[in-house]
Image (cartoon, rainbow, N blue to C red):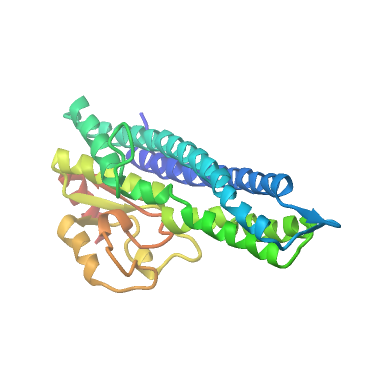
Length: 288
């Protein structure tokens, strides 16, 4: 039977694997978008002596590029929703195993409710995205379509050769790993998505089970914040956790900070792992 610490590490590992795997999928989708734009440019833009012609006809054709980008947007949305839900499922199982290791009254109804409420909180009702929800904004990359159209218009006005356009567009749209347009969109808007999913489902389980104590679990890195260094592997009750909202430190979100979902802030790799009061008192006595 795995120990509580091993089950905590399992949750942390699932969240980290999810982050890395999803970032790889985002870069793959980014390459698909890049290829679609280049193919459209080759097939639709008039050229003369190898250079794109600066004509009203070419500029007018850019509106057709939006159809290509809309198709790409649909592929991105569908693929990413499926990816996130798949990894969320693994995180849910890791949390179910975690609480099942010390809670005898963990029922199927509690498990189902925790999963359902977690997804609803993040913008999915079990069948589709909730309008105005977090997931809807995360899977919307319209700003990228507008930026792409602007780059094509610039290439037309500057009479770039198709080869030069392909080179300059790739540098901006794809770039080095982690710096492409879709990758930046994802990183900016996903904001530690899987870590926060784990924290959310763990909290909702705790709500259903009446647990009020949590371990600030995880490991320290060379760049760990003092906020995390002072709290790692220590036990806190809900009022103590809520009080973090009134503190200030580098990396804390400026708006809508939620200590239960955000912990140490941007790029924090720590988790709140709720435990029974009996275990909390045992661990707190050792802290002293």
